[in-house]
Length: 264
Image (cartoon, rainbow, N blue to C red; front, side, top):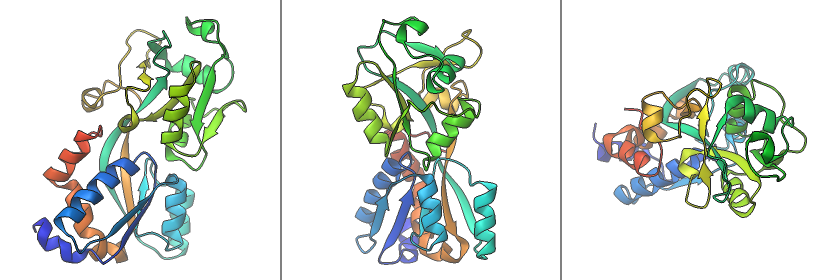
């Protein structure tokens, strides 16, 4: 079925809510889709994966964007409401660890990151940098990126109370770009010249890998993940046109253009 055939599947208004990591991808795809189909209207709002999942459960969004898998407890809530949920992987992403461009540090091990974000390391001179306080920025707990980073980088340990929680990935970019001693983490699509991404090692410093489309594709970058859309099976007809467009060759080309890794 062509994308023009699928246009009829999209109602006058389609709402998409959730992950800030998936937000730029969805905005780009929605703009392109609406150019092709002027009768379609797609509203895209961030707020975090958990926020999107709750909105989907409450019937306040048609599609939930998520940068993590749905938790078992969340699946149970949908089951209790007798809502069958469809899960679609719409792209792949790397989580980039970022610092201010003037910071001389170029690379870090997973263990060093764990110690920084759990509060054991507080000064840059403890990791080979200058004598300056480390100011760590994180997403807030409703974010899928927050949970993924906690699980896969902090080995499920709690963030230190000193870590500053930010409401959106864009806020982390802004804070890190304005603070010389800052460190944070964002999806690859958020990395700009205003911040610097670090090469990361998951083998105690033997090999360091920079986040990039290629290093995610060849599985060499260790902090990578799938990006998801969740929607009710009962809404399949309504959302199919847009979802099919994102998964099409053109849709995945748009994903690559803004720093996401295509799924095909």
